[in-house]
Length: 440
Ligand code: UGA
Image (cartoon, rainbow, N blue to C red; front, side, top):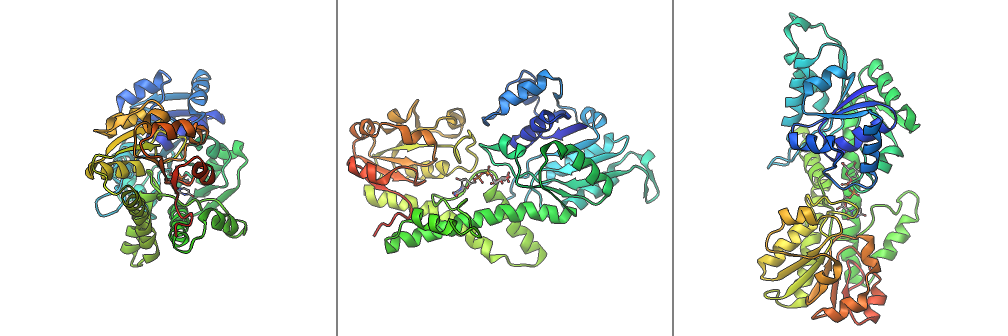
């Protein structure tokens, strides 16, 4: 199948590479000429395990190309996936300007049947707006009065991949959802995904759009729920790790997404929860549960910072080490990462900050000013009054904590992700503070 992917960000690039890997001819489009130039040279602008190798293999087989021209991609493809940014507006609405502009451009260059597929997370009813935009902008030869003479479909096929495990999530999905309004669109999508042998759910476009928003909002709710439980654990002397384990053993609940910490971040959950709240408001339903989910998430970070302040007394002129800058492990992505807010607050309170992340140092150099960026975890801990674990990179478990302890001014660890062995660290003489571990 000849497929175009418009938007070569995380979702677009992973989708393009993986669809090419399973046998399709894919053209990835982006309006950033520098990005396309690098991609053509086989250089990948993000860190995502396994993606680069797969991309090189697909390029070698001549099944993956890159262009800045929507016209070119549109004319060579039967199916066009939209993997465009939908950033939040100040009021929480998803900004769909990119989707509208690209839909208009596709319409201008359509010369035969096309299936246009939404991959980005968009509010329900966006599919209808894309159809309208395409109808309005089709060349005159395809319109006769109110009649549209060119057949096309718009479908929704939301992406559920997680950064850090995106390639394997794509290849082994729990489900693939098709939101379609015609048998033809369903048939084409089934053919595209046939090699994955995945569980497929077919529904209409609006339900498919809702599935994506509701899934992300539900996962965010799970995280805020366990974070609220963690606050209670601190008050009653319980350990949230055991509580999550005990809850998770119930198959109806499940253990995943019950890791208490400093809250969810990244480019998806905060934006999608906001956008779902806005959609509910506009539809006339007050989804107050989600507003509370968001409030708990914000409070979680505040209470972590409050704890640091309380234990260190004054932050002014103290030096704090930060381990982990990415919004989660196995990615270099720092968008909406907890580290940004934490570091800004520490600096505002007069602390000096030293930081290390295994993959995000290039992003950190452009996003963080006035922070000492270190080459390894040891130098980020040296001469500090406390160490903050902000991202749970597995390699932090293997650090020699005796060396860390001896190099710090005060051996104090605030583990924002509950990733380290509290008992072992306490034995080594650290003051260890986790999240919801029973601080009475
Ligand atoms: C999320 C969803 O998990 C994907 O299914 C979805 O496709 C994607 O958004 C998207 O909409 O594009 P992602 O943002 O890459 O994926 O990362 P997650 O692994 O879901 O983590 C999100 C945030 O929640 C991170 O800040 C993570 O640290 C936090 N988290 C996650 C917790 O605090 N506790 C947990 O138990 C799990």
